[in-house]
Image: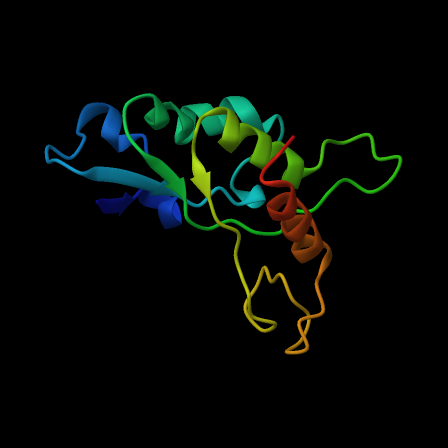
Length: 131
């Protein structure tokens, strides 16, 4: 399978509405970082890349900064929101980045001390996905 990224650093798949790649074994990738859109996220995700999952394999090959909501927060947390959305659409995903110097990172140092985003990713993967 050949994976094709969208525009805007692989976030925007809207060009495939009018001009999908006419070839076999094509899938699309998206990088749905939190800073790409303001809340409410879900309608914008649907408009920008999620729609593609109805017709093509889609893989969120990179996103980061995903953590659980702080206690008593009134705002939805990006981490649970994006995982729930991706999995509801059948979109595979991978978090970024396992390096303490490139952000948004999952680890603080080379002793593999997890950041809040790293801890969130670990818990989600141990659970086998969002529940």
